[in-house]
View: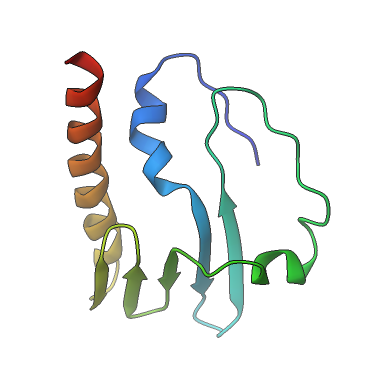
Length: 105
């Protein structure tokens, strides 16, 4: 899936999300997501559809039904229901404010 935007703010928000994410759904199936953020159009990597593509690097985020571990945001904890969204959002908001301050100074 590819998203395109023209304003600079989305990049400031989303760049810290870059990297491999491994999610485990309630059926126990592992789902892998590679997040890339770039100012120029990206070429879809070869073999992105293959399982071994996602084993080349350690995931920056692991998400299970009741725990989240994120190496960038330094989150490593259990959560209730959908609370992981709040944990990630708070980290995104902090990073956005830091990056915005860097851009305007």
